[in-house]
Image (tube, one colour):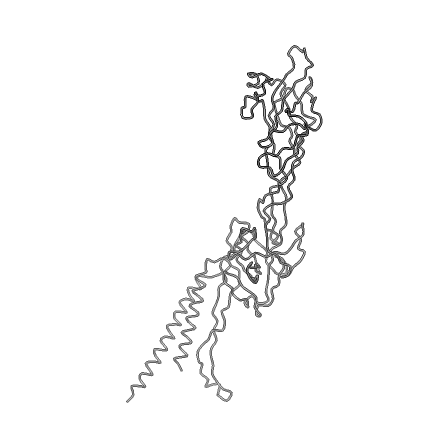
Length: 434
């Protein structure tokens, strides 16, 4: 019988060694919780047997218990590296068959190709729904939803109206090419020849799907007041306007726009909105109908050529700039158009008995009857820990203690092996009796 008693001790020492080895192997695993093998003795006795004469029959494994104390903190620079600073677990759901719900302390999350926030195993991080102000509107397992990060924000709007306020220099000369070829030469202007125009301005306009296109205007000095004052003192500029690679003309004409100033430098024409024929440049989703208004402060005088103001009424969709995560778990996305969007609050779950959770691998757990139901709510409420962004919880394995346990398991194994050897020698002595 002592053989089997010692054999149970050998098995127990091996299990203890396996548990310790697993702890040591995961000393660098984020969110890992150390385990401890717990054993109980085996007693074989009957109701009529004297309790003082009961002899133990060895040992058996009662359970592998886990230590859920918090590990140390590793600071990172990633917004989606999250840590629960206190009690609680992140909640994830797999996207495959069954949509299994798991709980983890490992907060290393990333955005996948579908713009879902997932853990290393591809399970989606669960959040609680919020209103536009970031207030939670529902809690509990049934209220949770996967965290999805929209890559854009808002609805695009095609540009229809542009306003531009400029100052023109009164002493500007005719451009070099215009002086050479003559003002009546239709080939005197070329947007690729900087000598054929005086100045150029550019603004960005948008088509109906929000694609950005450059709208460039080239300003050419046509006439200037006579030095001897023999004319009316007006001066004229010709404006060639391109949207993308296509030139646009005022509606009903095939001639470029003219800008005329009075002798005092005030704008004579155009004083109202100029509408251009519809144009569809390369890259535009559809024809664009544009109009241009020169601001009332547009003037000519002792100035340099300057764009005082430029505005247009189109817009594109905002592109994702980044994510922020508050201590209450509120995740907000910021976009290039200056808008922000509250995406949800990180769901944090607690349990009546965390030690009853079933280990599912990859530092995650699932619910069992021993753990009790998951109590899901927002962070920093009802005993749940706060959410720390840019931080990860390291393994709570105490390497020094594990090395001591390793030595202890080894000694236990050797002692039980020695007991078997001793029992064998005693049995051999009995057999050798003559």
